[in-house]
Image 1 (tube, one colour):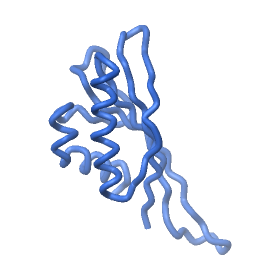
Image 2 (cartoon, rainbow, N blue to C red; image 1 turned 60 degrees about the horizontal axis):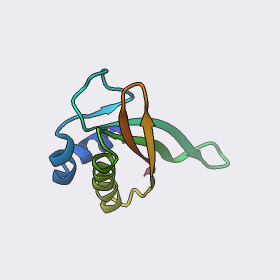
Image 3 (cartoon, rainbow, N blue to C red; image 1 turned 30 degrees about the horizontal axis):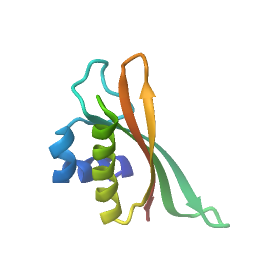
Length: 117
C-alpha cells in the first residue's frame, strides 16, 4: 500500500476529519466549485538508500491543503487532520494560512513527512 493510499484511508477513518469535510479528501486537485470544506494532498516520495544502493525506507512528503470558506473553518479542519496524523506518529508542521483570491477560499496548509519501511 502506498503512503498516499494509507493517508487517504487514515483521514477517511477519522471521525473528527469526516465530521468537517465528509469524504471530500483528494489527491492533487478537486474540481472548481466543489463543496467545501475539503482536503487536497500532494505527495512526493524519496527512497532512503544505504551506501550499497539498497532502499531502507521511503519518505513521502505531503503538502496537505485544507480549504474552506473561512479561515476558522480551514484551521479547524487542519487541526483535525494534524491530530489524526500525530496519533499515527506521522508528524506535521503548520498550519500556515493561505488564500485564493480567484476562488475566494481560505486555506490552512500542513506539511507531513510520512515514513514507510
